[in-house]
Amino acid sequence: MASLLALLFLGTSAQAQDPAQRGRALLTEFCSRCHAIRIADKSRNKLAPPFRTLGRSFDMDQFAQDLRRGILSGHPDMLEFKFSEDDARAVSTYLRTIQQ
Picture 1 (cartoon, rainbow, N blue to C red):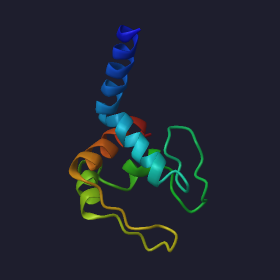
Picture 2 (picture 1 turned 30 degrees about the horizontal axis):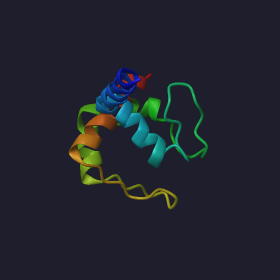
Picture 3 (picture 1 turned 90 degrees about the vertical axis):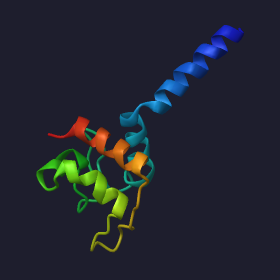
Picture 4 (picture 1 turned 90 degrees about the horizontal axis):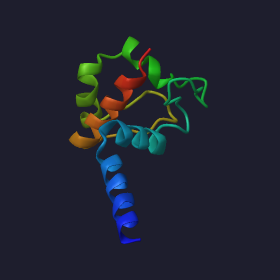
């Protein structure tokens, strides 16, 4: 039983370390109420672009720095977001996996 618990803990710990999974979790928490954050979902807010197309409008190499400085939109429903360096890198890593 203890071995099973240790394996479960190690598996969960390894998942928590994966930057793409961390990035997806952050986007789910902060952005999915308006934006499509997966490769094939729809944005709940018609004015919110799906994140899988951000690479068409933003330099993805620069995007992590933008997340650290703070993303501010002129749209009244969008809050300003500032991410830590690790979280910005994780979000950027995830976004790269879904770009079309």
